[in-house]
Amino acid sequence: MHVHAFFAMGIMIVALVGFLVRTWWVYQIFLSIATVPFVLCCWMLPETPFWLLSEERYEDAQKVINTMARWNKVNTPCKVSELCSVQQEDPVSGRTGENDMSSTKKHNILDLFCNWQIARRTITVWLIWFTGSLGYYVFSLSSVSLGGNEYLNLFLIGLQYINYFSKYGWKIFNRCGIWPYISLHSRTVPNNCKITCCWKWKHDVPCRKCGCSFLCISEKRLDFHATWQLKKKGCACPWTAGRLAGCAENHTLFPQLPVLSEKVRFFFLCLCILEMAAPKVAVVGAGVIGLSTALCIVEACPSCSVTVLSDQFSPNTTSDVAAGMLIPHTYPGTPIHMQKQWFKETFTYLFAISNSAEASEAGIHLVSGWQIFRSTPKEELPFWSDAVLGFRPMSEAELQKFPQYRFGQAFTTLKCDCPPYLLWLEKRLKAAGVQTYNRKVSDLWELHSEYDIVVNCTGIGAHQLVGDKKLFPVRGQVLKVYAPWVKNFIRDGDGLTYIYPGIHGVTLGGTREKESWSLSPNPDTTKDIFDRCCSLEPSLREAQDIKVKVGLRPSRQSVRLQREVLSQGGVKLPVVHNYGHGAGGFSVHRGTAKEAARLVGECIAALRGSSPGAKL
Ligand code: FAD
View 1 (cartoon, rainbow, N blue to C red):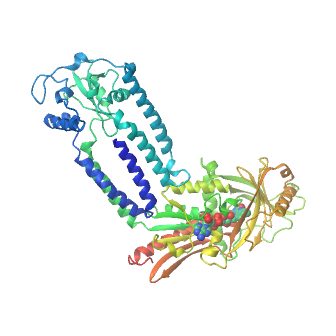
View 2: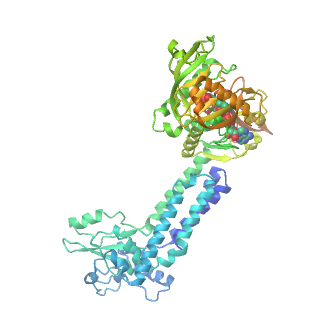
View 3: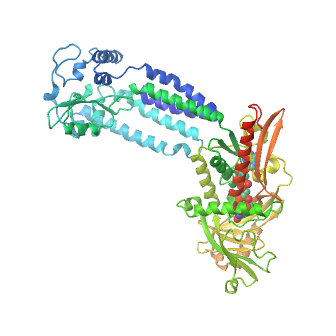
C-alpha cells in the first residue's frame, strides 16, 4: 500500500480518537502514543541512495539499492555507477563507467505521449492527479468546520485520500511507472534539464556555460518531490550557481527525521503539559450570552480550554428571535451604574465591529430613529442617553410624523441582526479553538468530572436547570418582514410597539406576556402587531415575506451574575451564573460576559490556590 494510504489512516485515527476521547489532554496523549510506532518505523528506514551518494557513501548506497531490488523482486539491481553516470569512474568497483551525456535528449511534453503505453499512463496519472486533488482539496477546504459532525468530516477526508492512493498509487508509481510522474513534475526541473534513462530516476544537467555537469536527482520520496544534488561541488560557474539557487530542496527527508521527531515529541509533550495545566471551562448555553461569555473567557484566559455545551444553537435560540436593538431594558434589582457600564461596554464593542470590514458578516450596523411617548416621561434623560450617539429631544417638526405622541427622543444606536451575529460569534470561538457540543445538561453537577469550572448561560433554561424560581418567562411575539424602504427605527416608549430595521429585514413588535411559556404564534397577536406598527409607519402595509417568531425572555429582577460552589461528598465544582437578561440581553451582553469572565478568572485563581483534589 502506498505511503499516502498511511497518511489517510492517520487522518482517520485522529478523527476516531477525537470522536471517542472528549477530554482534550487525554486526546493529545492518545495521539502522541499512536504516533510513536510510526516515528520509530520511519527511524528504522535507511537513508535514500541519493542521500548516501551525495555523502559519497557509495557502498552503503549500493547496499540499499540491493535491498530495494530484493523487496521489489528485481533480479538485477542497478549499479551505483548507473545512477552516477556522469562520473567517469564506477565509485564502487573502480571500473570506468559510461558517460550518458551523449545519450541525453531534451524532453518536451509530447514525450509523455510518445507511445500508447506511456500515453495511457500519462493520462491515468493526470486523471488521478486531477480527481485526487479536486476531491482532496474540496474536502479539505474548511471541511472539518462545515456543518454536521466535524470528526465525521475529518474521517471522510481520510477516506477520500485512501481511495486516491491505495487503489492506483503503488501500481502506477512503481519503478517503471515513475517516468510519466517525473516528466509531469519536470516543471520543477530547469528548462534545459536532460532526462536520461528516466526509469532509473536520474537527470544529468549540463551547464551551458562551462560544460561541467551536475547531477539532478528525482526520487520517489514520501511526497514525490524531486531531490537535487550538486555533483561537482567546486563549480564556480554563475549559471550553475544560479540554477542551484532555484532548487528548493537539496536534501532528503529521512536524515531529518530524528531531529523532526524530537521536535514533534517535544511539541506534544509541551502540549500535554499545557493542556493538563489549563483549566477546563464548560459554558452551558449557546445564545448571545453563552457565546459572548465563552469568547470573553478565551480572550481573558487564552490558556483555558473552553467548551460550549448546549441543547440548541443558532437559529433555534431565544437570541435568534430577538430584535437585537441596543436600547437597554432596566433591571430593578441591579445598580444603575452597573447597568450603564454593561451597556457602554457592549456599545463600544459593537461600535468597533460596525466600523470594521466584518460589520456586514457580523450583522451589526448603526441605525437612527425615534423613541416616542404619548406624554412626557418622568425621566426625560435615561441613564444610557450619553452612551448612544446624538441623543436629543425630538423637534416639533419631527413630532408631526406621530400626531398621537407628545414627546420624543431622537438618537442613533446599534442593531444586531441576531442570527448572523450568533454565527459570527460561533466562528470566532471556533477560530480560538473552542469546542462546541450539542448536549442537554440536566444537572450542572454532571459536568464535575469533566470540567473544572462551569458557566451557566442557559437563559430561561435555568428555571429548570438550577430551579431558579425568581426567573420567569416574558413571552414575546414579533414579525420579521421585508420592507427595505424603512430606514429609521420607531419605538413606542412603553416598549410594546416597535419597528426596527436591520440589514436583512425589519422586525415589528411586539408583546410582553409575563409567565407565558407558549412558543406557538398567535394569529390574533400577529394582526394586532401589524396594525400597531402600520399606524406608526403606514408604508409597512406594503411589507412582504412576513414571518412570525416567538421567544421567551429570561426575566428576573436582576441578572444573575455571580459565583457559586456546588459540593457533593467533599468534591467541589465552581459555577459562574450569567443568565436572566430579560428584554435586554443584546444591549448588555458584552458587559455581562466580561464580568462573567472576570468571575471565571477568580475561580481559576482559587483553583490554583487550593489542593489538586479540591476544585475550589
Ligand atoms: P438564549 O438565547 O435563550 O440562550 C440560552 C441557551 O441555553 C440556548 O442555547 C439553550 O439551548 C441553552 N440551554 C438552555 N437550557 C439548557 C440545558 N439544560 N442544557 C444545555 N443547554 C441549555 N434584547 C435586546 O437587547 N434588544 C432587543 O431588541 C431584544 N428584542 C427581543 C425581542 C424578543 C421577541 C425577545 C423574545 C427577546 C428580545 N430581547 C432583546 C432579549 C434577548 O433576546 C434575550 O435577553 C437574550 O436573547 C437572552 O440570551 P440568552 O443567551 O441568555 O438566552
